[in-house]
Length: 114
Length: 114
Image 1 (cartoon, rainbow over the protein chains, first blue to last red):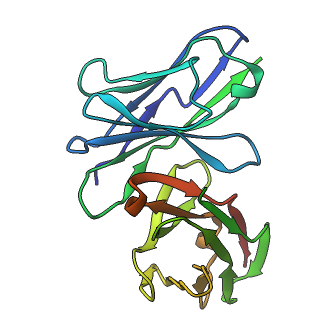
Image 2 (cartoon, one colour):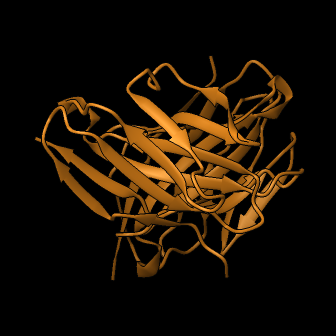
Image 3 (cartoon, each protein chain N blue to C red):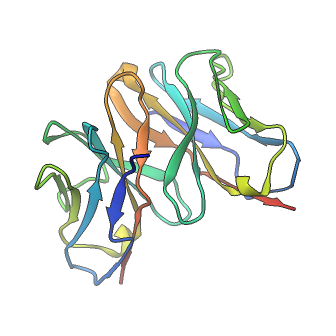
């Protein structure tokens, strides 16, 4: 069964450093999402991406965050200057489009900012 | 805005016990409702869904019925197994309001003991 993959599985970084989290969507999917889950809290929506542009974003997704599909396959989330409070599990999800509405999630990247 | 409230965990049950995890929601539109499951070390997997009132979603012995009058989508299983140990997330999307992003509850950790 096709699946969403994410790399790296774990990332430790120093505050102020840039990180790039990578996702490989399911091949025929058109909609891409990033969510995050701070330890012990809810899974929160960050951003959705369709047709090479952001379609929705939450209040969390400020100027420190950006997304792109640099090569038509990978879908990346960049955090420009990490803060301690960015420590979380980041999930990529993809959706084929149409009426099924099912988002398929990757296994997540655990980011720790020191 | 939209929100999901689910019962606090953790929940510990003996094998073959009956499971109920309560979930209620608030939405401005007419949402679609989902239960996702996260097994240890894995990503979120769709367990079941319902897209309109009185629909019953079911999968792997789990069931949930979309109750518009009580704004609820409680998850049930008649006889749990050790392999059901996981974190369960209730979620909604509100496509009628033009949004496919998922809004999640905090998650309920279920442990099933032999």
